[in-house]
Amino acid sequence: MNHDEIRQQLQRFLGAQLGHHNFVISVLRKIGVGRSRQNWMFELSPSLGDGDGDGPESLILRRDPDGGLVDTDRAIEFKVLQALTTSSLRTPPLPRWLDATGEWMGRPSLIMRSEPGTCDYGLLNGGLPLEERLKYAVLLCGLLHEVHIADWREIGLSDVFDDPGTNAALHQLHTWIDILRRDQLEPFPEVEYAIRWLDERAPICERTVLVHGDFKPGNVLVHDGEISALLDWELAHLGDPLEDLGWVTQPMRGREHLIADHWEREDLIAEYERLSMRPVDPHALAWWQTFSTFKTAVMQVTGLRAFLEERSDEPYRPTRRVLGTLLRQTGARED
View (cartoon, rainbow, N blue to C red):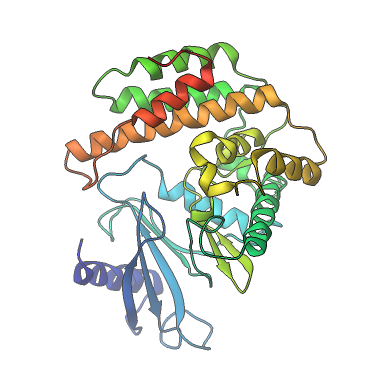
């Protein structure tokens, strides 16, 4: 989908939402934030459209691609963002409009307000001074805790998601097994071994929280030394808080979430325990870390099918690094 086609679709869609076409779409450009959705930033002149009269409203269009690492639902993401605007969580972007079926935008899409800030996948291990990187490491841990203490019942997320209760681990495992079976084109013995291992050892969930599902520096915006937004809620669901904690402490994510010799896995877990005032069960966390690597492998399987079906330009396949890590986490011997 090229620039002119997106502009024409936006013009028709926003005209239908606003009830008129007396507005201007400007500075439309594709941005790199988000790897599984197409993201387009633009400005809508609010004096002629639907703003507050103080200047152009900066917006982001999130549009489903033909193929990605995992299929998600823009309508659910829109409902989550709507619910979060009434929560104590300070960072979710404000949702504006939804094209749930792709009637207007060609693919399911949502439009949300653009928040100030920049996205940096290498926030903790880039060019910033160590002191600043450590500050952001603590801020990210605090933000993760903030997600987990959001009152999901009070803001209406029980109308969006089912509560898996104590079976959150098995629920997520079988959700991702279903995705694997739908998309796999070849057998992966390492993955099959991990499935059996995970199924036999699934921990009991002690409390249900809002889970982000893809928490990482690449999904936050930083502005004036603070985190200004937490993005990409497409994998959000209700479940075990250790799922997110397992995702950020799994071996495959070390460079994103840890700082060698200064902010190690133990430091992150200790800070989370301090904030939550709850001990983290190391055995349950180890299960979720293994599950996170399994989930990464499934995403790569899905990406491979999308590439072979010409729905994606980037080929994926479970790498030896991912499969080897998965075997080591289960305690199996790697050939």
